[in-house]
Each structure stands twice: as C-alpha cells, then as structure tokens.
Image (cartoon, rainbow, N blue to C red; front, top):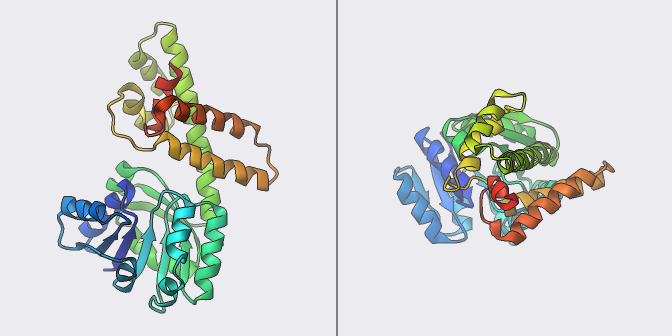
Amino acid sequence: MANVAILGVGKMGAAMARELASAGHQVLLWNRTEARAQEVCEAIDNPLVTVALTLSQAIANSDFAISLFANGEITESILLSDPALVANSSANYIFVDMGTSGIAVATSLAETISKNGRRFVDAPVSGSMATIASHQLLVLASGDESAVDFIRPVLQAFSKKVGYLGAAGAGQAMKLSINLVVHSLNAAVAQALALATSSGIDPAVAYDLFEESVIAAPFVKYKRSAFLDANTPVAMRIDTTVKDLALIFDFAQAQEIDSAAIAALQNLYIHACEGGFADQDMASLLRFLQ
C-alpha cells in the first residue's frame, strides 16, 4: 500500500482519490482552495482519505504526488515556485503530472526535478471519470522508468494500462495526438447531427444510425447522452478543448506538420466559447451550431 498525494482535486482527482482509497491506499488531498478538498474528502467518506492543509505537508507525508491542474502554467508555478518544495522532499520521492500540461512544461519539470535528485513522471491520461470508476483509464507515462515501475501497481486501482513511452514529454505528445482525434471526432459528430436535424430527422434516430454505422467508435457511443441531453453532467468543457488545441497546434508547428485542419478546428471551438458555451461539455458544440 502507498501514501499518495493528490494535488488539484477537480473531478478527475476526486475520482482517482476514491478508487485509490477503495484499493487500500492512503490518500492526502491538497487543493489551492482548501474548501474544495474538504468537500471531496467528506463526499468520499473513507478514513484513508484526509486533507493536507499545505502543499509541503502533502509532499512530506506521501510516497509520491499526482498533480492534476487545469493547465501546464499552473502546474509549473505550483511545483517549481518554491525551490524548497522539491529539494526538501524525501530522497526517493516521485512527482507525477497527470494533467495535459504540454510538452514544454513536461520537459521543464523533468529537468528541474531530476537536478534535485528526485524522479519525475509525465503521465497524462486518456479517459474520463467513468473510465476511472470502471478502472479503464489509459495512462500515457514517460520520464523516469524506475518511477513508472514503482507507481504502476498503485495506478492500477483506476487504470487498465500504464504504458511507458520514453523520455519525459512523450506522454504529453501521445495525449495531444489522441486528443486531436477526440476533438475532431466530437466536432464531426456535432456537425453531422446539426445537418441531420436541420433536415427534420429526429436526433435520437440519427444517433441510432451513427451507432450502427462505420463511425461507431467508442467515443461516439459513450457521448450519446451528452449530445442528446443538454442536462448530462459536463465531462470535458469547451474552453478546456480550446486549451488542448492550442497545445496541439504548437506541437504540429514545432514538428513542421501541416496544421491547417487544426487551425480550423480551433476556430470552431473558439467561436463556441465566444457564443457562451465555454463552460459547457464539448458535445454542446452541437447546440452552438444549431
């Protein structure tokens, strides 16, 4: 059993904490807003889950930390703003970033943390809260391979696979590549439904046929409710999709890969944000188009 600190207790962090505790691991929650950490702790209602009042307390009382912040700038500022945070951690401590922070942030964190003799794992994930609960999350790990081997059995509390991809930054590259397909597919389904319904076809009937056709990818199947029911809980916000696409565009530009399609996709989601859909699920792109 391990002592794990969750830094950044949003929906994904809360779901991971619940599964880790259910598997018997000690979990320390730390959030920039302490009230949020307390709220999650009470909701999980497991004596193995407690709240750390400070970031340094969370690090001092855990074997490794999982950071899950909204973007790379926040992750970097929190983990590197105080040099003592890394320097004063235990000699074998592991910092694991599971957010979509971007390749540049991952390589920066790896360089700074390794200089202090600590280990860093760049491990963004592919999946959602539902896949965490069903232990089907895909972890795209890179960085210190010995650290990945150490955390793999613990992460199995909520994942189906912890893949190892190489040097830090490779995990982010893989996540951005996967998310390019996800965001493209989401936009394609939204546009297709908008076209079908504009012709008088019942949206549920159209979706039935999507699921019977060659486009019936797992994403299409599990996003059905989000596309057809505006009251479905938000899984991934449109403004988060815009953040991802900016990272993907920069990645493509750096690799000198044509990014015209990415730019067009960016513009579509940006317009949805400007249209008042920023905090809504990515599937609400359909309602923006309509």
